[in-house]
Length: 244
Image 1 (cartoon, one colour):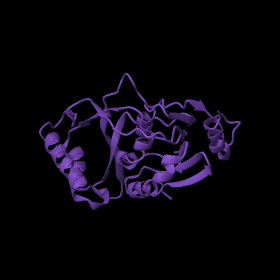
Image 2 (cartoon, one colour):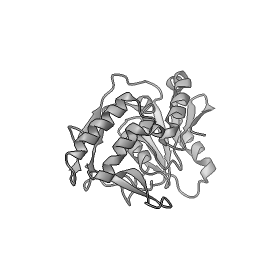
Image 3 (cartoon, rainbow, N blue to C red):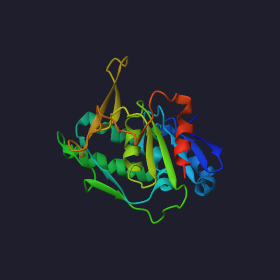
Image 4 (cartoon, one colour):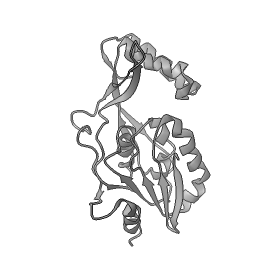
């Protein structure tokens, strides 16, 4: 399953998102759209991300409006431009499994052209170092959001947490995440004999070295220690969110 929603009690909903894989975006969005009214009238939202290893940043886009309180700052990345690395931008355009729409394909084409002009260099594809996302809408509810995290959260999931943590409504519960985000944008290339596949990263974050995540992870606001078994984590978060 790629995301489901449960009514825990009259003041709390649980949204479970097991993966942010690009192919899961449609399912995540449909769960959110189908339950939008319910989410917007419920006091507390628990987002359970345990064991979500990441995927595509596009997959969490529709989650952000529910937790948004103030502009979200995202520090960008630089791509190492090489013939092989830049091939991924062509894949975005030509391979249907990436699910890019026309607007996204246009971005990929422009990015490819920019990268090809600067082979051998690290290239920032945006005009600025920081992207600032502003919204005119701040929903009154949910007024408290508890995000459950653990040591198996990495990559895109950590990128989502860096955005979510900037909201005044959000607290993280659980254990420290895996810590694989500073070097990002995975690409997979088959060997000439086609028997092996190499997965490697194409970009580095402009957050480093001042704000590194790799080998450190993102820490929870509320550490859930070993005396609380996994199956009771949701209940633990529920109790804290519902304390008056």
